[in-house]
Amino acid sequence: MLGYGLLGDLLSYDFEFTEILVPPQVTFGGDEVKCRFFFEGSVLKEYYVVICIASSELAEPTFKESLPLIDSVELERSVIIKRLTFTDIESTYNKINDQSPPPSSLVLYDPTQKKIDTLKLETYSLSLTPDITLTLEQRYLPDKKGGTDLGFGASVYPCSVVLSLYIYDHIYQGSFLELGSGPGLISCVCKVKGFRGWCTDGDSGSCELSRINLNKLEEGEEVIVEKYLWGEEIDKYVEYVFMSDVVARPYVEDLPKLINTLKELFKINPELKVLFSYKNRGGGEETFWRMAGEWKVERVEEYWIRSEWRKEGIEVWRITTK
Image 1 (tube, rainbow, N blue to C red):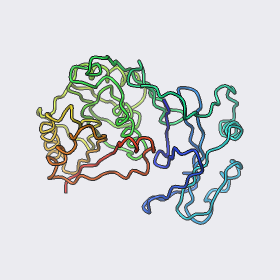
Image 2 (image 1 turned 135 degrees about the horizontal axis):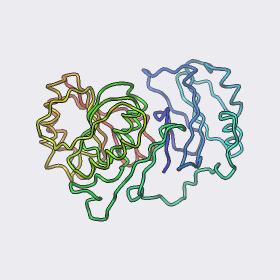
Image 3 (image 1 turned 120 degrees about the vertical axis):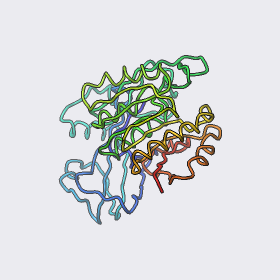
């Protein structure tokens, strides 16, 4: 699978020169001009260079000098993403890393290649940066429930990837509670970020899988895995609640219990922020919106979400008190 890391908010997956206007509240400095590598496993598939223009000229001429292959355009508060040729990739990669990877590892992405069903793989890998890759164990079964008793909690789904990357790039500190962890990708990202918290799921198999994947991480703060069913008593003080793919038809009958859990958590911490990702899977979200009417529910800006995921309808939403 393709992984990606920093500046995910600026990624465009088009194969031509692309310009993205940055929202007014976002500012960039020269040290935020970065390079982006895209790996499939250990193979470099694509290389992009991102130039952040804070004013009418590049803020960091030394960086420009180190990457002479980049085309730049003087546009105020804009971001230019340039896809490089194979030769440019090899040359610039070697400059940045001061090493020469084997030529066979420099393979450009082929958009015609067959898409792999990652849900059925034994492991799922996500590159947060060129130096940080998470590899999670999966236990998919063709039992119409995806391998767990409660259903669909044994594999990493795209919605959890999107929310994980949002957390990695946009949230810098805080305690957390994950509801419906599945194999635990979001909690693994939180641990890598140094967050303390709880990884919970109502399925014993998912909890076991989350525990295995969290224990693989040698560094990071403590993340406790607990079996928790929505609606049960809860007394945890956290700053964030993270949920992925829980607002969906398979779980619609349990949404009132989920709402009750969130109510209890808001009582404990009125400043709580709930972030959840989902894609429309048959109307469950409409039921959730109605039940969540007492809170402020707003969609997080989409500009940072990869275009192919936007086309799938994956969104990230935020819940806070009004």
